[in-house]
Image 1 (cartoon, rainbow over the protein chains, first blue to last red):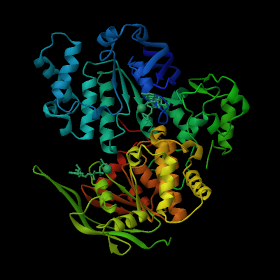
Image 2: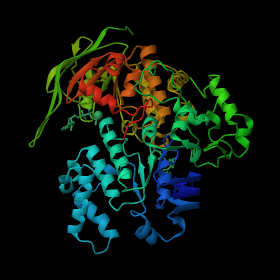
Image 3: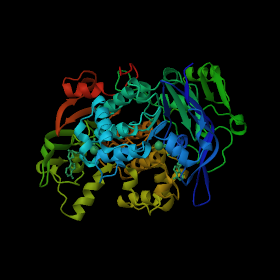
Length: 340
Length: 265
Ligand SMILES: Nc1ncnc2c1ncn2[C@@H]1O[C@H](COP(=O)(O)OP(=O)(O)OP(=O)(O)O)[C@@H](O)[C@H]1O
Ligand SMILES: Nc1ncnc2c1ncn2[C@@H]1O[C@H](COP(=O)(O)OP(=O)(O)OP(=O)(O)O)[C@@H](O)[C@H]1O
Ligand SMILES: [Mg+2]
Ligand SMILES: [Mg+2]
């Protein structure tokens, strides 16, 4: 088995709002990331994808708080070390993060090269501007990014170019793991493909070893991820190999998601799309039983009262009281969950 | 509403943005004819001019040259009355639903205002009945929105609410500029569903702007492909998407992630 670069166990993170509410946005999440892999995280808006990413990075700034669980990066549980050590030894070097909408958050008054200087000077003491420039130019060249971008300001770059630049900057220290949160959602398809190619190139060239890719675009995820994890209302409801989760989902929610995929392929036109009515539960309440309960066509009384644990079948896992066979049978009967 | 009648047309519609430094031809002599009761998709890369064209159709920008004709007459929005009249017939659904709602107003009141716009007198419970119908139509439960402010709703709920709003107004033309880009696959399905219902049950014409070719292929009756301010290819979805003739269209389609086969990366 390949080396585990990242190990997350029973992680729980909460937002504490000024109304004294506690929103559990990441609830008992566990997963591993192995060397060479790209793990995709899917799920609808507000299910906790970005919060999970921030938690794994140890970015606990109010109102976000760590509650419990373990995040092992290269053998160190980062939830147990002081923030200074995390910042100096782990962030940027072992693990790097491209936040959602990062490309629109670049400091507009600094040239790209200055942004790179900031990153490198913080981590490599005594490094000179000249050395930084050389490293930056080499990296841009290897990644097919025009070198003159280094001297430009963020507003002088197109969306796609900005996003590629952000990726190049955040991986300049060769972190083992890269977490990319919706890096292509604001881009058109052509720029999107170029960005994805760049990310894959980073792994191929060994600049990074593994990646977590967050998006709600399932066809996109299928094209880049080895494994897919589906989140719903702060929990993981299914995970497995990309191929299996996309073509043969187990959980009723994943099944609904996969049935709403739209691609420009023959046979799609005229296909009835699955619409899951209603909305996910509010995470500020203490939730009991299955969180998908009131949107699920197969819900029974026990779903609401019993605690639903993950079930493991071969290399896959899912969170539902029903057995795989029972679910499969219902999907085959055409009794798709919550069809309109 | 009557179907398959010419509703909106454009003749050599052009928009040039210029400042001291440079001149951008955002929309370059485009011609089009949209009929009533059809969904027309406009697809193209970022910066190809889609939003600029949409704003001209909505009367939010004036063309630099050319003419947009709505129901036989060039659009003319000089007076307040003319504008109100036009916007009763032509309604937008924008990309960012939050910027389209007054944050200080409860959303059910926004829907009540739409009914006022119709100049009909209804009792209170009749009004709420209409609102509830509109909500059901877009898969929103009335309870999800009642007594709520915009920021208490999710992006997907807001986007569906915008469609509910349009439903109450029953315009002849809806311009939807990337209405689904912020939301996940499931809520997206319910929005597409709602747009198709608008067309099928009310006979509204929907101009659907997107860079997602899969969605365009799925919902539309006709597709226009825009590149650098011009329409480079147009026609029925099965022709344009499954058998494109232009290199640019082929290129766009090949960049869309698919599930039949994976990208070689
Ligand atoms: N600063 C905050 N204060 C309180 N609650 C928050 C805050 N940020 C996020 N939340 C809540 O936490 C939950 C998870 O949000 P998160 O941003 O992680 O979702 P997401 O899956 O990344 O969604 P999206 O696809 O829209 O990016 C949501 O219910 C959200 O309302
Ligand atoms: N107010 C403006 N002033 C100057 N240039 C503008 C203005 N609005 C748009 N442009 C330019 O016009 C061109 C077309 O822009 P437009 O927003 O219509 O593209 P789009 O197809 O909607 O792109 P996207 O897919 O990114 O939304 C771009 O080059 C843009 O930079
Ligand atoms: Mg997010
Ligand atoms: Mg636009």
